[in-house]
Each structure stands twice: as C-alpha cells, then as structure tokens.
Length: 321
Image 1 (cartoon, rainbow, N blue to C red):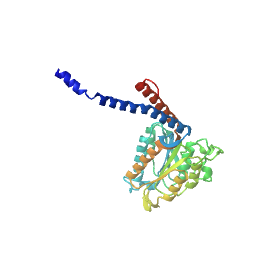
Image 2 (image 1 turned 90 degrees about the vertical axis):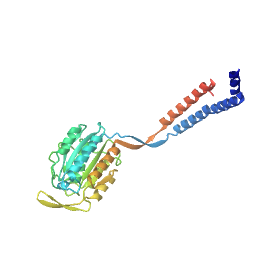
Image 3 (image 1 turned 180 degrees about the vertical axis):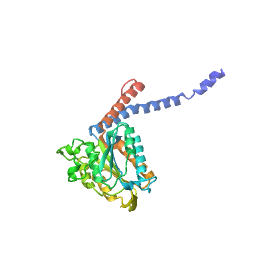
Image 4 (image 1 turned 135 degrees about the vertical axis):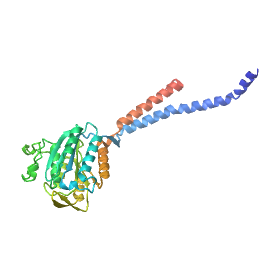
C-alpha cells in the first residue's frame, strides 16, 4: 500500500505534465513552417544569382623562379650569403608547393638562361638551383623575357630582337630566335591564372632589356611578376674576382614591375625574411580569392530546409503541415 501511495503522490499533478506536453507540441508545430519559410527565402536569393568572394584552390599550373646569380649575391649581409640564402629559401618554397605544380628555373646575371624547364620533378629543380654559378652584371629585363618565352614557347617572344641582336643567350634551349612573332590580343594584367613569375634580385639592372618594357609584355599576357628584393637598399661596395662594384637594390623598379603586372613586391633583409616571403608566396599561389556565384549553394540549402521541414512534420504529426 505504501508503494502505491508513493506512486500516486509522484503523479498527483498530471495536469502540469499535460500542460508541459501541450506547450512542447505547440512549439514543435511552429518549427516545420518556419523551416519552410527559410527554404523559400533561400530559393528567392538563389534566383537573384548572388556572388560572394570565396577562397578556392588555385589553378596555378606553372611557376617560373627567376633568380639573380650576379656577383653581388656573394655578399654576406644576408647570412651565410645572399646566394645561399636565396637557394635555401627557393628549395623550401618548391618543397611546399602541391606536387602537380610545375616549376621552372631561370638564372640571370649579365644574361638570362633557362637552368631548368618547368617540371614536377623536385629533385631536378634542387639540382638546378645547386648548380648556380656567379657571373657579372644584372639583366633583370632579360630574366622576365626569358621566363615569358619559357611559359609561351610558341608565342614568338624574341629576346634578341628586343636587344637589337646583341647578347646571344647561350644555354637558352627554346630556340626563341627562330620563332616568328605572332599577333595576339592583349589581356588584362594579372588575368592569366595558369602561371606566374617570381623574380629575386639584389641589384639594379646594368645591362639588357629595360625591365619595365619586359614587364609590359608580361602584363599584356596577363602574367603576374612577383618581385623579391634582397640585400642592401642604400647601396654597398662589394668585391668580386679581384674587382669591386657598387650595388644598390632598385626597389622603385621592382615595385613598378609588380604593380604593372598586378602582382606584389617583397623586401627581404635577412635569410629569415626571405623564408617568410617565400612562405607567403606559397600560400598566395596555392589558394586564391575569387568572386563566385553562390546560387547553387543557396538552392541546395533551400532543398535541405524544405526536406527537413517535411520530415519533421511527418515525424511529429504524421502529416505535412
């Protein structure tokens, strides 16, 4: 009898329970229609074909590293010296890139040469970088032109005609001089997203093609030229092979090249800075922000909300509200 009495006492206030259940049912009744309204709103937004800036994997397929191997790169203001710091940073950069991205190497001093045609073989790239030999002079414009000729071997980009036939490029294996210049329609700067050029230098141009003229060619083909300055901005006298030379980083021209091609300029005063620059470039070139139409996403959200509304109605009320 005591157990029955206790049980009776436990459920003495059934009206309170019923009221609570009624409130819960009343709340549930509003959820499916609310979800359906959200579904309609999402469909209306999808019909307006909205766009949003989203971060997507880049379709970058080829990157050309144009690296300065002029005598000033032996300076030790960047430890252990500028060349070794540049080599180490370039190799780390290559290692971080997705395996499908091809990388080509152009080495330049008084002339520019293709040290390695674009390839996905990382070992070949490292070997090419380790083979760098220091030379005299700095031809930044030639580096850009040879990089473009490497990216567009059939476009008839002719370095010799731009130089009036001087300074034949030994080691340039693309036979650009045999190509006839082809007509093409200039595109918007930075619009060619399948390739990019990264040029690293520590000095100002002393010979070869005007770098701004070369940058104009790159801009007309939509190719971005990211420029990286390393070393002394104010100028320094450096000894090389028994003679001395005054070197100064021409930041103004490097910034102009980057601006003209819708790219960016980076300064690296130390080996650590240079590593960070390449890390930044790696992240910039493997993902990109694009204006993308999101109608499909909104339509999908509308469908999910509509199905959820119908499903909850059937589950709770055995009918679609």
